[in-house]
Structures are given as C-alpha cells and as structure tokens.
Amino acid sequence: MKNYINTLNNTTKEYFRILSKDFPEFLNDYIYTKEMQKLDGINQICGAYWRMENIYVDMYSVLKHSIAVALIVWNFTHDKKQTLAALFHDISSPAFKHCIDFLNGDAEKQESTEEQTIQTIRNSEEIMGFLKRDSIKLEEVCDYKIYPIADNKTPKLSADRLEYTFMNGIYYKKVWNLAEIKEMYEDLYVSKNEENILELGFKNIEIAEKFIDGASKLWPLWIRSEDTVTMYFFADIIKKMYEKKFLTKEDLYEFPEEKIVELIRNCKDKNIANLFTKFMNCKEFTESEEFVDKSGIFCVDRKVKRRYINPLVKEKRIYECSKKAKNIIDNYKNMHISKFAYIKL
Image 1 (cartoon, rainbow, N blue to C red):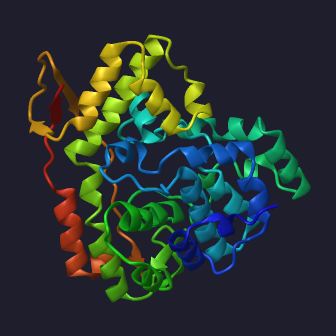
Image 2: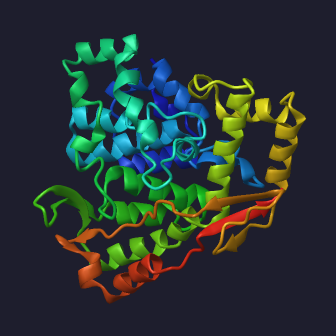
C-alpha cells in the first residue's frame, strides 16, 4: 500500500507535516478506497475553481481537505475514531460540492450533501471491512459533528473550519506562508469553551489576532457577488442538464468535475453550451437591492452562509479580550451585502 503523503507536491507535503508531524499509516487503507478516491476529482473551492484564470496544475481537492482535517484531529487527539470521522466528513460530496447544496435549496447552511454520509460508508465493502478489522463501529465514524474538535457551530474553531481557512489562505488568496501557518498552528491547544466543551483555542492573544487578521481577508470572498452567482449558476446549469437527460444525479457522484465540465461545454443542446461559455467569460457582476427579472439576466438571492471565526484565547473569546479582533469581526458581521446580484448573459 502506498503512503499517500509521498504522492503530494512539496508545498502540500510540507503543509500536511505542519498539521501532523507523523502521517498515521492506518489512514492509507481508507484513503485508497474507491469512495475516498473519487473526492480527488472534486475541487474544494467548488464551482469558483473553474472560473479562475490560472487554474492550479495541482488543484486542492476535497480529498486533500478531508485528509488535512483528519490530520488536525489526529494531531490533537490521537484518537482513531475521531480521525476517521474527520476523514469521512465529506465522503458523500458530489461534483461542485456546495453548488449542489444551492441546487437543493440549502444556500444558508450548506449541509444537504452531508446527509448521505452514513449510507456511503455503509455501502462500501472496503471501508466496512477495514472498520471491522479495526474494531470500529459505523456509528462511531459516520458523523464528525459528535466530536467537537472536528466540527462545531460557527463561529467556534474546529478542525474543519481551521483547515479550509488555512487552505484558502494558501491556495486561493495568498494570506499566509507556511512559516506563518506553522507559527499559528503550534500556538493552538485543546481548551474548554464557555459550555465546558472541548474546542481548539490559542495560547497567545497576539498570534490569535494574527490569525483573525488573515482569516478576515478571506471571509468577504465567500459572500461576494461573484462567488454567490457562480454557486447558483452551476446549480442552474446542472439542473438544466438533468432536465434534458444529459446528466444524472448519480453522475455527480461518479464523474470528476473535469469530465462534467466537458459534458456541459460539448452539450448537444447548444443553448446550454453557449450559456456556459458566456458565463465563464463574464467579468461583470452587478449588485442590486431588487430582483432583476429581464431577458438575458441571471439574477440571484444573496442570502448565503456567512463564515467567520471567533476563537478562544486562554478560554475566552477573542471578541471579548481584543479590541482589534472585535473591530475586525464587527466590521465583517455588519458589512452590507446587496439583496441580489446578477450578470448579463
């Protein structure tokens, strides 16, 4: 069996080794199952990845994100069950990930695609065989929400929220370098929050402020008009492909995103193909306080999930003990976003 970490490029390998100095060998069997490997064809940045002018040669996949979250959990718990629950948390992700939550009418929580996690694991003979071998029950690894280090509610700090923040700060918008991530990561420890529940927290307020300063540069990206319109557009184009029988729901769980994009671009229905081409070339995203219902206009509601973090620092929220962080968080929470956004197609 290959050791997964040896397949990575130097940047990702170094990043993973920051998250956990040792790469637990038991993960490899699970990583190389069919169900986990399909995640390598899904981008963690969802549909936005395909609009980027300089698409990464080595894209950051949902598989890499899942492994990185598992490494964080392993680093702080050294518990196999919690680590595997973290590894499996996105195992039921379809192509374009959260875009399909938008298709399912779940733009605000973005959790609808997680509902098939237990079924995906249960239906995998490989995974179930490994779990039996390792004396681990399905119910102990099918829901990472039962482990607060792995997942908790916004704006608390969890392994999942920490990883996608770090990842976006390296791969999406250059906010930190690896040395800075190492400094922040090594300042974290398992703390107790105000509800007496375990949570990752910082030891030093200066480092926590540095984390907030960098993370806050990412938060607006996830609610900007381009991002929201893109998510809704991919949901809409996938729906059109469904309706015309050019794509099935099952295809989203079998095909990598690259293949589905090609199916759309080469669609026999030229209206769909041309619409996709126009969208990919679109540069102007317009905000509006009223819904724009005109021919050639693709207008969407901007009521979406606001992601941010208010971490613990020595068991107190940084919002309570840092004026600088409080101002940053307040500015983001109070930031006005238009009710709608649209593009001309």
